[in-house]
Length: 329
Image (cartoon, rainbow, N blue to C red; front, top):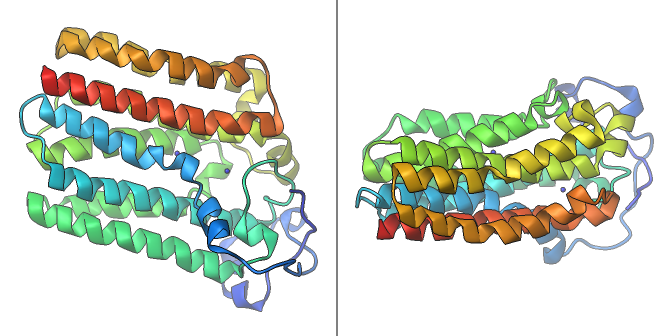
């Protein structure tokens, strides 16, 4: 749509009802329970929600509102509702990934952020419930947005978003383990989120909206790709075949650079098909350049973690200035 080595353990009886969801890779399961070393805190829950990925929920709505503003049809109320949908979908998918990867054992040797399930601080079912609570908030906001806009068929789109969020790493055959994660992020946090936002406000989409959606989707996919680039060694060891694993280190870095460059291309294109003001979107280029440094300098492991936050910030900056440009245009 767009995460400390630990001792291995197996899901306890509280999560046994969920074990049938998985394909039974014995090598990727834990062999004995882990005893929590401390009590879980609110900060742990916040960290597991991965705030550095929240830009994937907000930036598409900002940009989609800009596309609607181009024709003078932007609605702040509808934009806020769409932002709630996007934000809680991102939180939901992050908790869902924490649960699904944790119960499979694929989070045992990672250099990334704290994980609730893998740490043993929270029972798997608790993390699963948190994921679906977040999806529920997103669904409620989505229903209100459908009611206000009158486009009830968008409920089907929202349902597809929740299904895609869960089966990214959940279920027997998670598509995130088959190299399709970045494709899903591009579609749901790019095309669907941007054009859906524009449609609920303007009752139509246009080529400017498509260009913006491609740019936002590309950068969202770049955030996901940077995360998976960092995890190539551990993912290969546990049989998680992400796009980064398929492409390898060099191919993944090349693709990241291409994806991260899409906002620059979109700004130039928008200057021709929408308004010359769109060129102010190029101010995001230096921020993207900073995010690219660890990628092009072949940083590895924890040194790649800042890329996620920097790429997300660059996406928000581009969305904000592009929205301003389209409003002025």
